[in-house]
Image (cartoon, rainbow, N blue to C red; front, side, top):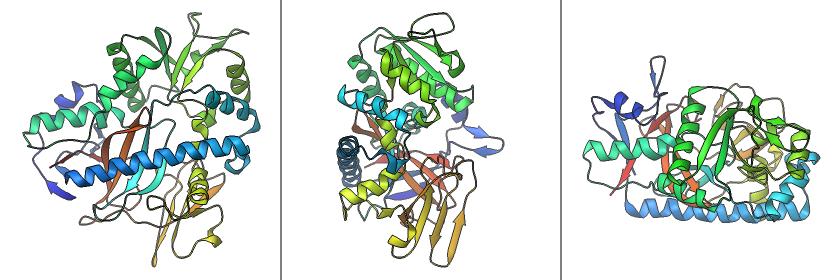
Amino acid sequence: MERIRINPRPDWKAQVESLGFTHHTYDDFIFWDESTCYVFRAHEIEEIQRATNEIESLCMELVDFVIRKRCYHRLNIPESAWPLIEHSWRNDEHPVYGRFDLSYDGIHPPKLLEYNADTPLCLLEASLVQKQWLEQVGISGHQMNSIHERLVSIWGRLEGSKIHLTCRNNAPWLMYTMNYIGKTMNQAGYSYKHIFVQDVLWDGKKYIDQDHEEIEILFKLTPWEWMLDEVYDRLLKNKTRVIEPAWKMILSNKGMLVLLWELFPGHPNLLPAYFEPKNLVGDYVKKPLLGREGANITLNYGENTLSTDGNYGGGAYIYQQTHLLPNFDNYFPVIGSWLIGGESAGLIIREDNSPITRAISRLIPHYYL
């Protein structure tokens, strides 16, 4: 695993915009940075794939355990959501996508830092944008990237002909992600309709949109925990299928890191994690159960402490053993390992000058030899 400097494409902005990726810069900050890339060897890619599939298998065992034991309270999941979680699991509602954040240096086994299981972003960037980059820069190498093809194929599992896509607002990163997902649905033979959350309406018997059209399948970029109690109850009583399925509430909660360690202590791809810091020996990272984008994190390592602010600091926390990201001349990369249909499908690098990966951390392409 190496970090190398390369020349960006002269017209890279126009090229990525042609794919719908409009949020490539933020003020003067370059979010998509192709002046750098990471180079892997084939055996390192195989190790990431193996670890990704292995961790996903552990996660499925964890979901089954939580549902059988009904220990949702340990994850602060409201009781109103329990029946919907159980219904979606027993009804065999398949996942579409998810992203593990892994720490990997090419030497030691990949370690799971967290699971973006419900509303992961950077999908278009990891898929078509990264693939276009490799095709155009003339590098003789391969890429761990079958995201697009797998997304197109997975829609064939659904019953129905039209899918509603919803998100809370028109933030650019939400909109271009929605548009990309819609295009993969079109390629699979489905039509789609984009609506905002406020346009998902209840007519007393079923969910409809603002045009009074029934919503049979709803793909959301709104976290499950932002739903109201009445939504859980209504979804249980009608046939609207929601993607990601409700059982993903178990995995999109960082308390799952604690339960994974309890079920599989010492696993080489997991880190010790607890609900109380006193159970850990040495340095630890404090993370909110429902935090996102590196917000409200406290990282202790040696004599150093780093903290980030945010809007997720009001609830419960977990404490995970510190495992610093690899350091490449003060650049810290995290592996975003994508799952499509529950299987390893690609990776994207997020890089920062801080050991804590944040919302504005750069996206860096990769290839392997």
